[in-house]
Length: 123
Image (cartoon, rainbow, N blue to C red; front, side, top):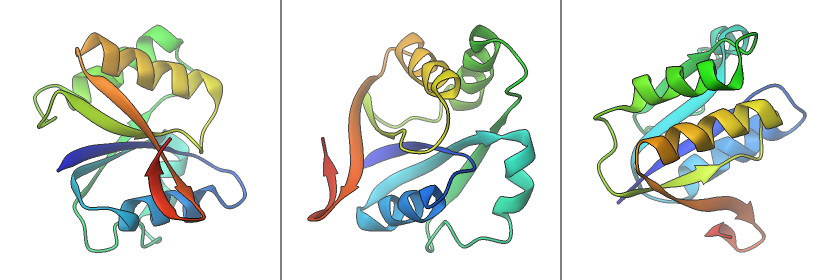
């Protein structure tokens, strides 16, 4: 099983999309990268669908390099394979760049996944 890393931020419908990606496949581990402000709202939402979810809160006032370092530190030693599934439907470009940078610095390959009409698929 692959680990899933998904960006999750404010945006109409993006929480539902990420929740369906989480429940749509079997994942070894799920990591949600979100803003420090949005993290507090996640406790009241049922995003985990019975799966273990680790939330990585980043400070979006920092530079992309600093955010990447935060994400890398949070993920170091926790990924179980040489590649991860990545969903970046939610979030902003700076957050996406920080996540991709962190994953590549960790030497990981990425497979982009998204919810499609046929279910969760690698795109």
